[in-house]
Length: 115
Length: 114
Image 1 (cartoon, rainbow over the protein chains, first blue to last red):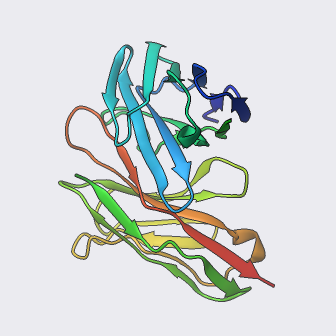
Image 2 (cartoon, each protein chain N blue to C red):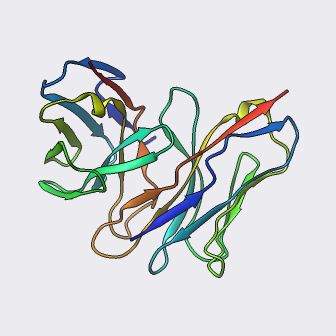
Image 3 (spheres, rainbow over the protein chains, first blue to last red):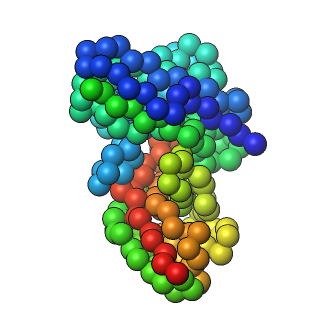
């Protein structure tokens, strides 16, 4: 089974802190994604990466950055956490190009609260 | 850009009722289409998929048919159960460019009452 693992299920951080959310996948997927999920807004794409060290902005990249130094790991960084970044964060991965299955696989999510 | 439209709900049904959740999309080319399900406190799981026009995806009694002429991928189930209570997301994966971004609808909350 494909496994996408997010490092924490719940996090509480203070305003202004630098926050790291980690995601690891074990299926040799090229693509990795970070979404945030908010009531009434669905899933919104923050950043995605289609290869090591490659990244593209999604729909709401402001206040976030990402790092992909190894193929299996994709980190989301909140440079200076703010209360409006309180949300559920979902990591996903998928094969790139036409190789393999087309669907994305998701981690369990990290519920981040910024106080 | 790509987009997916679905009703937000909530949709409340009695057990054994028929379910339809509408999904329409806008995309260039020939995207792949998906329905994901999210149970309370969990991440998203793939429910079914279709990769080309007229394909029918099915799983656990749920079905959806890829209709290119109407750009739709409506989810149906003949007889829902309480255990189907969850949030359902319609999504598409584009095929333009060198990577494949996945775009989601807003999610439809389904509540099934005994």
